[in-house]
Image 1 (cartoon, rainbow, N blue to C red):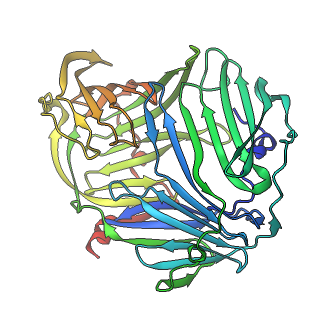
Image 2 (cartoon, rainbow, N blue to C red):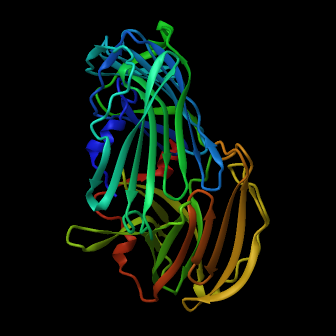
Image 3 (cartoon, helix red, strand yellow):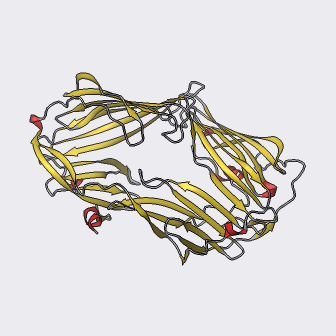
Length: 482
């Protein structure tokens, strides 16, 4: 499925020096921390003599036709090549987004991340050459990849020029790129599928893309375009941090703590530990999507569960090294004997530890769950009453089934323009304390089915309940008290 980087290079923005830092969000003790990391990409040459301002908008369309409209992104450039970008970036749910304002000043040699919540501007040195904007040409030039190209794996890419159109005094040139993936090359597709990209850009003026439209297998469509284009000089104040803000110099990755907190949560988790029935099991998930042309795309992955006779549990996946040897990589360990739970951040090689409030019960004395009333979830989605589906035997264990429907009214889930419905079905074993079968129908992701297999009632190896070497343990209960 890999695509040659040289082919994709033709779709990179020209003359833009936005997004000098990447942002990640984390939470500890109810406090939200944003970490900004320079992207280490050289800034593109700053375009001079061609000021503009515009609004970048984007939306995606699910296979059932629902449009998901994303927050607008405002951009500016002055005659000297300075740029400003204003974008809402997601933080930790449900705290709301962070308005990331980036100013890139190639004249002074700095980029700024403006934090309006703390009234601080963080600046990093940059190096960016400048060049004058070319005058609009009467004709769109032919690109180096026009025609048909065969890529590794039998992928056939066809590039064609769509001509020109004039928008707000700038000439935008159109290109259409179609890649055909043979059967079996993308998510086990049972027949060839296509990815179609259409792009309109103003290379000569270094303006953002007027339109990018991507049609993906499975029926998903994403569209990005610009509106409210003005070729007038923006207000010079837009390219300077506010005078009342503190200015902080940075040399690399830096962190910002937001002056807002998540709703208070208990410092401990409550759980009932099931004892006297150790086991290990694998749950295999399969997601199926159907392309509008009828092709079926299938993705599979597995998760692994362990529980020992004392009630300790571990949940995670398997990773393979270069020799093919597989090792368990935990996502969560609940050590009910020691009285804490560990959640793993694999990216940061960090373990977040919180105390547990535990009650113990022999697995043989568990009872079937009782029906639960309907409720409203935190995303303002309406949840229907659970539909109880009875019992059946799965992998030798009695399982109780229920179905829940989540209905998200328009505007409550990523800007959806119509009712968005997700249906969940679960068959749970009271003895094992896990779902033996799940089924989720999602308008965008398709249908996912998960089934447990290879249930083994032997005592698992004790190593799966220990934090592997190389992880840093953070006591979140201590962070919450500070």
